[in-house]
Length: 393
Image (cartoon, rainbow, N blue to C red):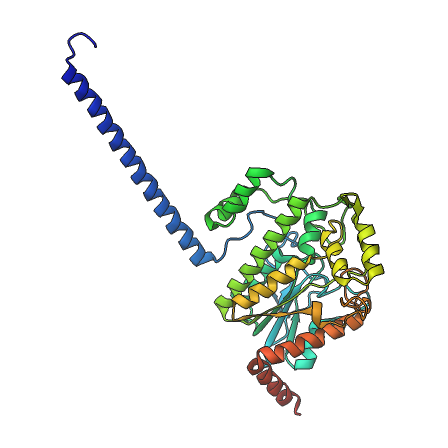
């Protein structure tokens, strides 16, 4: 015991130290609770104003030097990312239906004009205005912004929005090396958890550079198979963007239809990978020989080189529509003509692994038109009535 310090004094100092420690701990705990409340309030405010959190990865948009996807010109509102600069249909009193997507929607079928693509076929069958806003290379990152501009930046709101997307999210992730080397292990799990927060997503999009190489239409390089982590990240970001489209459509009270992305699973895989001594090509040949359509789908889902969207995208879209009354799914996977042996979309519907043939466009257009008439008869019926009146029928 130090000289001059009594036993009582030592006890007093000890108890005082304990009291101070408890006070500091109490203040620290109160500070943490206050910070948590502030953080939670900020997250709620951001979600209320911005909707579901966007993907934290920032990507190069398919716009080049342009700042927006739609611009007002002398001919009207024009999707300036399209080469032919076809304006949106003029308002003639009939409902407007907007189709968003990549090359399956527009310019993916050689020598096929706009009128032969499924958006044009739907418009003619339903006698309503049809705006084909598709373009090669567009993925869900682009389509969210196009839909946002349609609903909030000057053009009249479409009465119906139809979205066909999925393939390009995986294809662009591969060709543009969008995700680079995704963090492994614990770091990846932490990232996945944080990406559910709007605060984290906004900070990441503000601070992170755009990922991958600048997008150039019609040009790509063989980047090899997409790593599984990057494949999963592309799927997660696609799902986030689909939720954001739902949020935008619900906010504008616009019916939203998703078309499940289809592909020819009867085409062989492009991925040379082998797992446990069994190559995808061998699994494909075995499924063909056994007449196993589900086996062909599984091979397609494991192909990390082809841009074909996996079955999980269709499952997610169906679940999304079940959870939102203003959202519908046109299930092209089961609604298109089926191969009689394998029970998968028939090869005559395609010109390659993902792009539709002229007959495929006709069949998909008919399927979408029939589903729209059944889902929103009041919109379609009024449009047909005004269409007959406009033509004098």
